[in-house]
Image 1 (cartoon, rainbow over the protein chains, first blue to last red):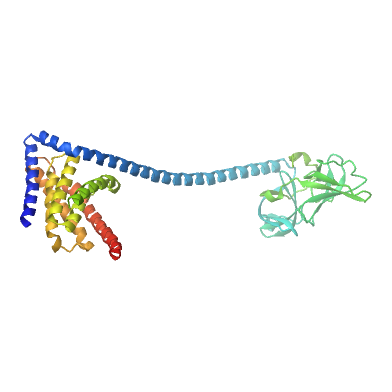
Image 2 (cartoon, rainbow over the protein chains, first blue to last red; image 1 turned 30 degrees about the vertical axis):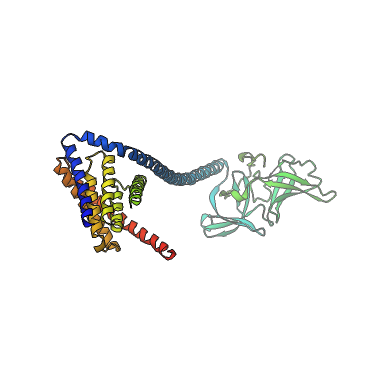
Length: 280
Length: 162
C-alpha cells in the first residue's frame, strides 16, 4: 500500500519532469499538442463557465454601480431642488423689496420699511407683528401699506415691534369710497376673515361687482386713495338703511412679508401710485 | 474513488472558473485548486491528493499557457504530503488552518519558482514573492479557513440526520 502510494507520487513527478525537460529542450510542441487534445475541450467548458460567471458578476457590478449612481444622482437632484427653491425665494424677495422701494420713492410722504415677524390668524384677532417699534418713532394708528394697497393700522407699539390690525380683523373699520361712483362707506372686517363695505342704500345703487374701493382719507388716519379691495358681491338688503358690498382685499394678508409704515401725512390722493391687482 | 476524483477535478475546475473572478481582490486571485486539493487530501489521503493535485495542476498549467508540468508537480507533491501527514495534523482550528495554508501556499510558490529556475525560465524572485506569492498565500489562508469552517458547519447539520 505504502509502496503503491510512493510509486504513484514518483510517476506523477516523473511525468512532470519529462514534460518540463521536453519543453525546455525545444520539443515541447508535440507534448503540448498531445496534452491539448485532452485539455482543450475541458478548457473550453471552463472558459464558457468563466465567461458566463464573469458576465453575471459584471452585470452584478454594473447593477451595483447603477444603484450607487442612482442614489448619488437622487441626492444631487434633491440638493439642486433645495438650491432652486432658495434661489426662487431670493428672487421673489428681491422683487417684493424692489416694488416696496419703488412705492416708497413714489409716495409723497414719509414711510418706514418693516418686516413681518409674526402673524395672528386665530379669528378673534387678525394681526401682524412688524419689526418696527417705539425706537423707530412708530405711533399708534400709523397706517401700514404694501405695493398692493392698505394692510391696516398699528394698534399697539412696543419696543422693537408693532402690532398691526389688518383690515379683515373683526374690529377693523376704515373710511373708504368706491372709485367709480364715489360712494362713501365704511370697510369692516368680520370673523370669517373677509371684509365688506357698508354703505347707505340711496348712495350705492350704482355699485357693481369689480369696482375698486380705496381709502377716503376722511378722519386723517389714512392718506386718500390707498386701495382697500375690489367688490366681489353686493348684498342688497331691500329697504334697509345700509347695504353691504363684499370685498376681495387688495392685499393678500397671508403672504405679506414686507410692509411700509406711513409716518408722514399728505392730503394728496395717492391712488395712482398703487398698482391694481386684476382677476382677484 | 475514481468517480469522486473525476467529479472533484471537474467540479472543482468549474467552480474555480466560475467563482475566481468574483473572489478577485485587486490583482490578487486565490489559488482555489490548491485549497481544494489540500482539503481533499486531508480527508481522502495521499493518493487522492497526489492524483488530484497532478490533474488540477496540469489543467492550470494548460490554462495559463506557461510551462506545462510546473503546477502539476508542485500540487501533486503537496497533495501527497498533506494526505500522508493529514492524520498527524490538527487542522480543525482556524489558528492552524490559516497559517498552515499560508505556509503551504508560500512553499508551493517557492517550489514553482525553483522549478522555473531549474528549467532556465526567467522569473524575478523579489517581485514574484512580494506581489504574487505572499498576497496569494494570505488570501489562500483566510479563504481556506473560511471553507473549512463552512464545511464543518454543513457537516454539523448533516450529522444528527445520519
